[in-house]
Length: 177
Image 1 (cartoon, helix red, strand yellow):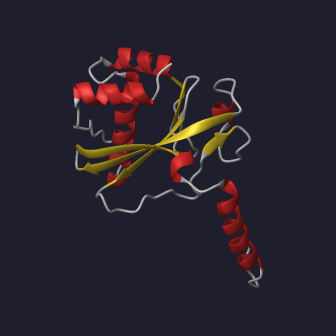
Image 2: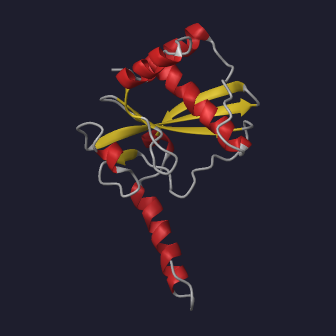
């Protein structure tokens, strides 16, 4: 079972800072984000220097779920943490969390996750590890890993705010939430 300590050891010994920028579409931001996500997969699986078939095999050994573009998380370590990968372009940039608030934990009953994620292994709750990289072009300038429980407020806090916004929007004539 791989974990954050393994990833830190690999990062410290290999010191790889170059991203393999792949052209996956016309959107440069998504392309660099995908490349950073692949970097994180290689970091946890220690698969930077492997040929493609061996790399995919190592990923299969390391991860129970490899995510998709529409649902969290980006990956799940087998019998370990859920991982959310976030790329920013400068140290003082805001962290984009897309359409949902940050979470302390990933829960199997979360309506935003896919069935493939729910069924990837036997689990109920997983720690979420946010892996944030400052990326400039194809270079990783800084990497930070922080657990959701250390970074995020409780779900009740965000849910209270979401509910207030929802109630406010529902009072506007002609607008549906």
